[in-house]
Image (cartoon, rainbow, N blue to C red):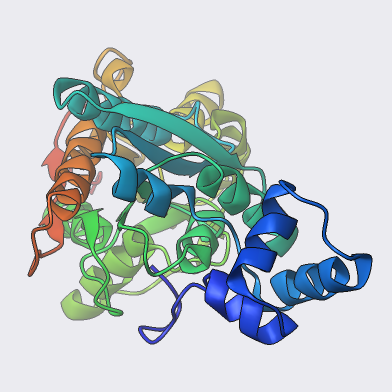
Length: 340
């Protein structure tokens, strides 16, 4: 996958041409198998840097045998619910297919960090890669991978505008579902606490906004939060002092739990005073009191679908289509009609 369909990863012949030497000379410089004149070696290294050439372990693996190793490229937040369960879905599906998985972490969305992760992934004899594109770092990693490498993205969109292959969860549809439900309950509008977008458009927020606009309801200013419960608690403290907030849609379940705790600590009842809904479908939210209404995403299925698409690519299948699934609204005790 690359930022342009015309992109072609540089090969040894490109380096040789740029350096003005033969392909065997480039190979000897990079492998260190024989001594090469310092001036020639310097030209080769300069050409490698200029072209961004990387030894393609994936290509070697494909030439030598059927690849049995794939790389998962993900951000450093792999312990979070969505990331962890998507990884689990990929690993389980790969194990059943007799393949192994390596995980490469992108520590930030800075270019140096992204390229370091991509270089590390490509240094292994992988047949292909699955990139978790929940945030900007994953998106950048996808664009940095060579076009010759089979790649599948996994993320929260409804379609891929660039035509690249992906397994997706339609977060916008989920944001719309929960907002429309709260409006049907009689709330005049729905306030929204969004998680950090990291430079990526939030489908959850898009769906929320579209539902309000279609209903002719007021679109309140988005409240921006981190993904953790403590950040949600702080927003809950502010909401507790407002009379205009009767329903809140939170960017994830952890934010929602923090909001509910803050409201309870200030003597407000959920859902009688304020309805609260989350997003993700973490298992423990069904045991909270009150149990949390949420939009449930099947992340393990997302990982399995991503692996299946990659597996089909490795088998040489063409004309593959991205896989898109809508999340499901699960109504529980934390939402109700507003008090009249």
